[in-house]
Length: 104
Image (cartoon, rainbow, N blue to C red):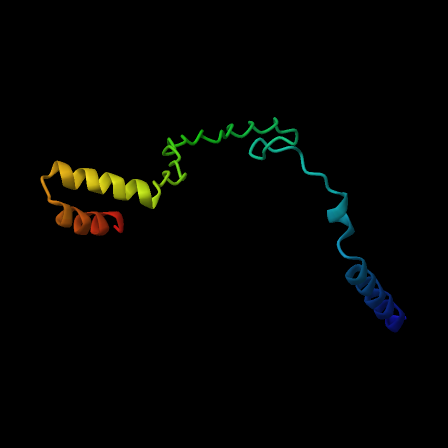
């Protein structure tokens, strides 16, 4: 009989170890004033972020890329002869001056 009682005691201990503390699962804790409430108010909305307007710099005016009209060789020679005559050069000096002036 003592053996049976020991076996039943060991059997009860084994069941308690396997099942855990059943009494702890049945306990319900009352609400505490130190815990936060379950239904929290909604969070405040985040601040509105606005992208600043980037000022645009004044672009420089477009350059006129059109080449100036070139005078023909004959027009340049005539202008150089007139400049030489206005400068008081003689005929031979005007010829040398107009050649050098027109080829520039």
